[in-house]
Amino acid sequence: MTFLIVFLVVVVVMFVLDIVITSKIFEFIFKRSDEEDVAYEDASDLMKGFIKQKEEGIAMLNSKPFEALDITSKDGLSLKGTLYRLHENNNKVILSVHGYHGDGLRDMGRFGKMYEALGYDLLLIDQRACGISEGDYVSFGYHEQEDGILWCQKLVEIYGQDVEIVLHGMSMGGATVCNMAGNANLPKQVVAVISDCSYDSMKTQLRHSLHTQTQLPIEFTLWLLDMFCKKNLHFKFKQNQQTEAVKKATIPMLFIHGDADDYVPYAMQEVLFNACASNKKKQVSIPNAKYESCYVLASDVYEKEVRKFLEA
Image (tube, rainbow, N blue to C red):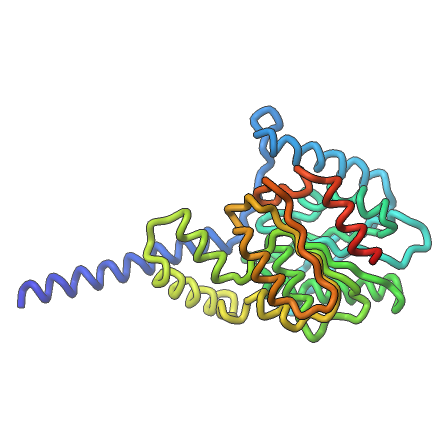
């Protein structure tokens, strides 16, 4: 009897401890956390390449006409963006969506020169709980997809009904545009989607991260995280599956991923591509590229593939 009581006490204590630890993990994963730039002299060679692209992109965009934009999300957040007018009398624009804990200018401004050469204007946005946009939590593309649709509607308002919008997202931004591609409310003016290193679902990405970065019981921790997600963000993991979203996609989709990515595993691109229902889809693999490094390591290939995709 004494043994049973001790056993039950241990089980209860471990259960409570798991709840406490998982609540901290939830806050760490989902809560706003603005990343700081690494000093150039302390950066790896790969990061130095990113920094160089970033600085060149910012300098180029700052020399162009631009206007600050804002929208209000469905749950009342003020979301910020900047529209760069790279051409006169233009009706083509990129909606660029950055990744996890990033911001528009730092992460995606480096693509500005590419899109200027392709004849597009560029809208850089700060996703909820990122940059100068409001919000306490990111949602791995779930609420962000609805924010993205509002940004598309804003572009239609600015450019008119004949505007052609291309979505370009990276990492969590890639997951966001995948979700948008399958959303029934996506405006007809969205003509193509480019997804760079997206995960195939929120749950599988979190499972991979827990497996590689913690010693916690994975499935139980995921179950608890799902409960915290429902309580704080008002959706369940099963509602945020990019694979299910692209099964409803009808517009052209380009999937780009580095084959050495061990943060968002390369295999996830295969899952997304195979699930995608679009009659016009393509996948591009960048050899030896890790997480978010495809454009740093192979900008010429990246630009060539994007051009071929958009001009096909």
